[in-house]
Structure formats: C-alpha cells, structure tokens
Length: 118
Image 1: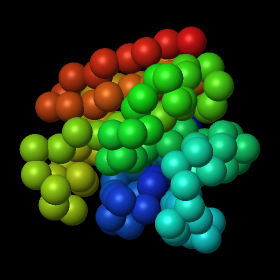
Image 2: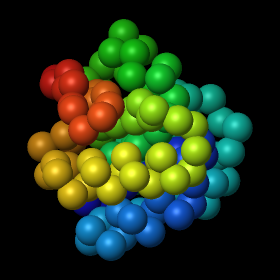
Image 3: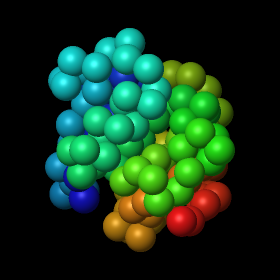
C-alpha cells in the first residue's frame, strides 16, 4: 500500500510501515510542512497514497467526505509521544489490511477501527 505520513507523526513511524511492506512517503519529504489540511489530503490523493495523521480535523467527514480522496486514517493516541505513535502504527499495520480502507475516513484508537465508507 502507498502511504503518506502527516508531519505530526515521527519519521520513525515510516520504518514500521516499510517493515510491513508498505511504500511510505511523508508530508515533510514532499515540502508540505505547514500546508493547510485540504492541501495535504489533496496531495496524498494525487500521489495515490492513503494519509495517516494525528490531526483529528482530517477525520471530519463533512470536510473530507469518504470517496472524495484516497483515504485518511486518524490515529487517536493514549499519549502524544513518538513511541506511542509507533506502537499505534505497528498495531494498525499488524492487525488490519489497509487496502479495504481506500477512500474511507478511519479513526484508529486502542486497536479498534471506526470506518466511514463512501
């Protein structure tokens, strides 16, 4: 799966996804640090990448309706640390196939997925 990590996730989280066979790019690597959320979602979709973020606003289905982008996964962490983000991404990648999430808005919290489909 092709994935883009938002700027609010540690770069080391990309290594976790690569270990599961995913192709990972970052908002920082594309020069989009500080860009508006809509621009980040559009850039991820234009690059055929599922976006993973901590930004709860990107989980708003009124602003980012399912089916109008390649997909957004919002991680809700118990703590804001880099280690907590890596653990959440490891849990997500090891327990869920990401392909069926294309086009969806997903909230991932404590191992559970809430999925809004197109």
